[in-house]
Length: 72
Image (cartoon, rainbow, N blue to C red; front, top):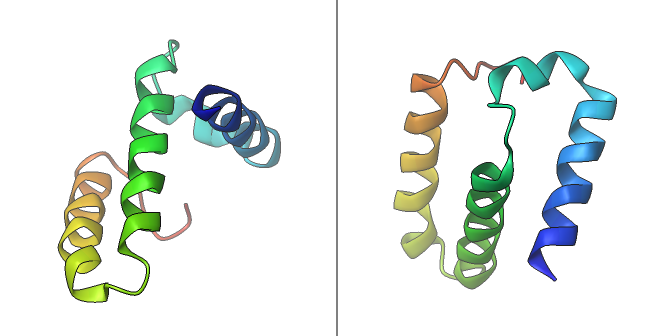
């Protein structure tokens, strides 16, 4: 069920923010996999903030490196 959810998320994201599409490669299959993996980690970390915080910080660093700013 992960693929349909990730597809819907990306479709909705690009519908609401078409300018965001330029930040992604044409083939979104790897990005959709990463999205679902991140959501899985976040869900597992609910109620365990100390475990989730390092993963969230790492994700933030990667996004900053990849030109993701506050407006995104």
